[in-house]
Image 1 (spheres, rainbow, N blue to C red):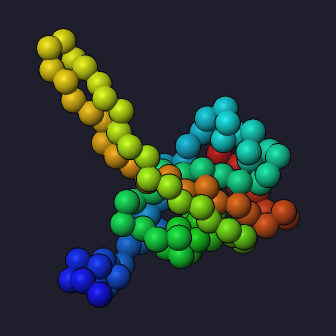
Image 2: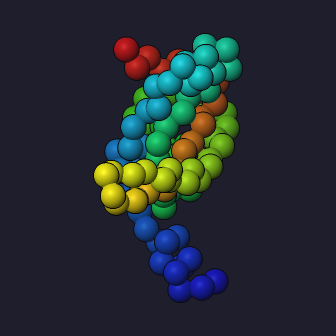
Length: 104
């Protein structure tokens, strides 16, 4: 195991450091109603097991499965300067059918 990977496995994040914000979008609300799956922006160092633990602790629900994906930042332009939004990590968390999360 490389030094970098070994350092990351020893890192302990609190639940509020793992879940940065819920992604409340039209597609996300559709998935929440139909599939009982919720999307969150998460810390880039968090693993699937970290996300499962954080969601269960913060929202008091039972998590069935977690999917994660890295999202690349989009190119942006301000007048003459070109830049890019930051890369981020997304988690889609599927809950047990008898549990729900209410954002509103």
